[in-house]
Structures are given as C-alpha cells and as structure tokens.
Image (cartoon, rainbow, N blue to C red; front, side):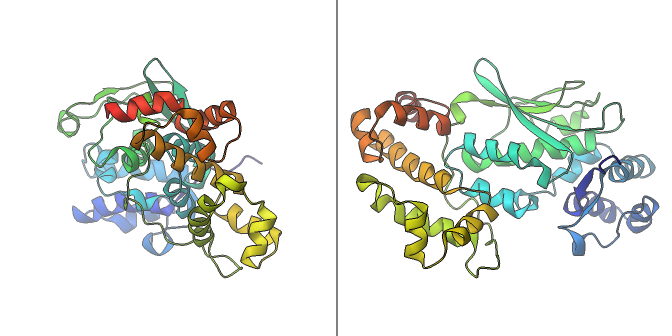
Length: 333
C-alpha cells in the first residue's frame, strides 16, 4: 500500500483565516475536501496533503483570490513549525547546523517533504520538494510555505529583515506584480527542479540571535524536559572542557538518573550528547575568535581540543568555514 502523504493542520489555518476575513464559506470549502473545519483545535494533527492542495486551489479560483499562497504566508510565523524543529533550531550554534537539522527533520512538517542544501559558488540553495507530487498543478501554494519557512529559519540568525536574492518555485508560476513589490530586492524564478531560496555562504557561520526563539519545553515521562536538560548541560560543560569532557555516564550520575534515561531525554529533543559537547566547544571558540587575538592553537586547547587539526575539522563542520575564515568574516561583519 502506498504511503499517504500528510501535512499538519497548522499549515491550513492561514489559508482558512484569509478566507474567513473576506467572508468566504470557509467551513463548507474545507468540508468539500473532507478536511476538518475545527483546524485550531487540531493544529498539531495531520491531514492528507493532496486534498489540502486541491482545497487551496479551488478556494483561490472560486473566491477570486490572487496569490493565495503568498497571502497565507503573511499570517505564518516561526511558531507554526513543529515544537521539535523549533527546539533544534533554538539550540543550533550556527545557521548551517540549523539548516542541517531542518533537512533531517523535514518530515515532521509534511510527511513527504524533502529539504536539502545545494552548494554554488558564493551561496547555497535551500531546496525543498514534496515527494510524489510530480506533474501536479497548483503546487505554488505549498511551495510558498516551503520557501517562507526556510526564510524564517535564516532570519533567526541573520535578523528579521533578511531577504533572499532569489525565491524559486518548482511550479510554473510567477507572483503578481503586487506580490513581487513586497520583495523589492528579490528575483523570482519558476519551473525549477525544486523550490529554493539562496543564502550567502558567509551567512552559514552566523550564530543564533539572542531572544529570537522561545520554544516551550518538551515534556516526557521523566519529569524534567529535554529542553531543561539541554540548558543545564550548556551551562555546566564549559567548566570541564580544559580538564576533559565528562562522559555521558558521568553526567547521568551527577544528575541522579540512569544513562539510558538521560539518552532518552536528549533523543526526544533530537540531539545527542556529542552534539551538545560540540555546540559548547564551538560557542567558546567562536567567542574567542571574534573577541580576542589569541592564536588558533591556543583557542583549540581552550575549547577542549588536544589536536588543532581535529579542532579545525570540527569547527568547519559546524560553521562551514575554518577558524581563520570565521575570524576574518566576523571582523568584516
């Protein structure tokens, strides 16, 4: 039996809100495609994606709405993403790591959504595609959502006014002039191999902006949330880096829980203990690279690395740049 592609009710709510505001028969349109009319109560639940796409297209045509997908994105915000995705991004040390998490966990948003990163000369493309929809018409509504969420993720690191140089659609679709005027420095492409936005390579090493994301805790059966565990570890680990990082078993013993329970809490948040260690090491190293003239080998030792070459490889994996390149980019910014 073929897998049924699903999307979260959360993503139908902005379309329903646009319809309600213009006095359209929102409930009857939803019911026509066997979609729940009580979307707000079921925001975290899933519905089939193909009827959702047909609903958006028929609603646009019967209600004479231009660029329905774009209008819906204006009612979206970062909090519409799943809780797990938001927490992973909140604890990503750089934009590159946040995008890697987004690629890995894309199916939390739409079960047939694929997101990947393509590298070009001086930028990367954040690409997305709904598997199994090749040849379907009117996918621009969902592709607006795919692109806008990539933009929102970048803005958590680059600032709320950041805009991509290009927004591309897999659909053969060009936004109306009124829509394009909202993106004065952005070009639009249609009929691409996937939907995508471009991001300068130099932006991949950007750190999370303070107070931009405030995800709620992830509650689990252990009492303490995965979110609280992450916060505690990030506060505690810097004290140990220059003496050797404690093992996971050591940390679990300090916390008075079993190693397995500790692993389960971190796994529930989508992270591993080594992820957190790497994040803490990177945060220490990046601060020293930005704010001091210390030699790179000294920064490697201060960050808990005994091998400078290992430090460079680990740093590049998180920042998309070597420590030296990161220092130069930081000072230019």
